[in-house]
Structures are given as structure tokens and as C-alpha cells.
Image (tube, rainbow, N blue to C red):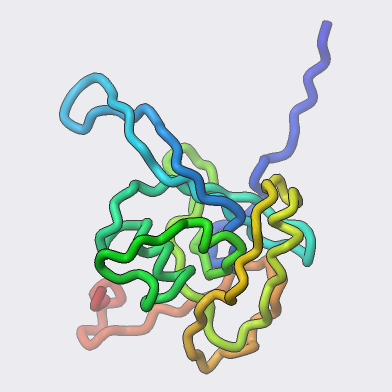
Length: 190
């Protein structure tokens, strides 16, 4: 009779914001349920693969599907904007997602509807953060596949916190909700 050993969760990471490295982005086709009735249809998506570095050579892999929509309110636009910068993501630009491979950003990690941790959103890293060498993650480490390292660094925004966060920190980045003019923290301007 076979013996079955129960393993640890595949993605042992808490909800929070982390530095992430893009290790792959592929177009995939998935069967999805119809919005307005029974049945399903086949749609194309982008499958983004990330690593949350836990050391200089190891990390926790996470994936995220985004649609092929590229309007300013889409996840694909948000990801490209955070990874490549606003000057690259302009109307009628043709962007090869390979340019995002090896780029770093701050990713908000949350559980999806099935309980698996995923990247909910991305934002550019503040200027002055220690760079992360993406090469170990692009050469098969942390369950990733080999991919070329981009020649140009990811865009960074100016920040008063420049250099305040160590490069391989694995604990979530903390944020504080400020009071709005009405005093209601749920009444935020976005």
C-alpha cells in the first residue's frame, strides 16, 4: 500500500507588500465561465510569474493572470507601468513583455478566491532601494525558468524612504492609513 506524506503549503508567505522580481510572462489560453449564463468560453490571458526573494538566491514563486486589456484601468497596464515606467506605457505603444523579465517592483500579496497567495497589484520601487540581482531567479532558482536579464534597470520614483528597506527583506512592507478631511479613513480620494 502506498504511503502518502502531507507536505507544507507551496506558498508559505503572509499577506502584505513585498519586493518582487518578474521571472516570466507568457500568453496562455484558459477556459472561463460565461458571465451571463451557463457554459464557458476560451480566452487569452497573460500569466505573470514572480519571485519574492527570501535571500540573494532563493525566493517564493507567485503567479498572476491578467487579461490582454491594456487600458489605463487594467491590471496589465498597472503591471507594465510599475515595471517599465510611465514613459514606456503610452497610447499606441507596442510593448514586448520580455522587457519586464528581471524587473523589480513592490507587489501586494493577497489570497485569491481559492486561498492561494497571488499578486494583487504592483507599484514602482522607491528610488534609492538596494537593487536586487535578478539573475539567480531567472536561471531556475525558486521554481523559475531561464530568461534573459534586461540591460536597463527598472524605473524608480523619488522617495524620502530611499535606502530604508534592506534588499532581501521578506517581511511585509507596512503602511499607515491617514485620516482624510472628513475624518473617515474609508473616505480616501482614490
